[in-house]
Image (tube, rainbow, N blue to C red; front, side, top):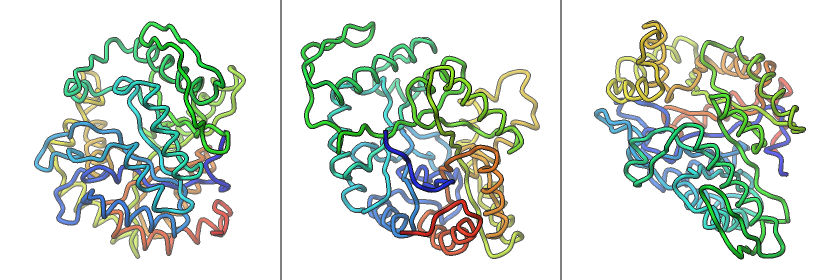
Length: 365
């Protein structure tokens, strides 16, 4: 299995394949997810020494005035294009197992992997937003069934990536006969798998299959050690050692005051409130018993970064907050920026050297 990077804390960009990125905002400088912008961003991130590009798997937007994330690139072809145009950075495909045949997906992913000489990674998603899947004519069914289907899907993909001889597979959701696939993944190593799982069944599925697991930060960094320990214990019970990552959005400016003012401008004053409210509903925060204070806080995070944890301040503040997450067990951060092309140069010039001095990042090779 491939490792993500040599760094103690790996860093990548999250959501650039979608309109608005992670910023659910009306502000005039919001992210335009054109191919040219994505290509320029990937090359900039590669040159800066970032470790990965992780796309959102979207089929439908969140509505609102901007129809947030309503325009998006399909992730396997997106990753293939970026891998062909970069040298070192990893590009992930975010694949909904309910939307694509596993043998077809296995072939597509191996193609991307060879294009990137082993720099392709798979983010496997079992699905949660039924409105999106109505577009595809797919019923997500009961929650538990998604993970049964997902396990069959990844079992077939792994067999296709490794089996030297044709194989059959007779599952509840997938049946294949005489399946054989060549070429195999680049250099004989399978791509890295990442996965998120919030429910008990989702976590069990994730630790069984993934190399890195996602954990969301809801209440604050102090909850991270417990979440990481629980996921690692689940994995250890199955004889596996996994890493844990989370998503954040970063607002870094010359002073903390400038950063806080800009965050308030784009995530509060200019929030696409209807789109943010869709996230509140789809994440289950509109149900009875959820305190209004929690909903209110999430609305700001939804507008600021699709619900990710905020890292806001001057370069010292941002580096310190990232170090705190690393010290609590986070191995990688998937980062959103209000406008990736505008904001990455300052982040790379000011925050990355600080992380290097802290020992969290190796000097760029």
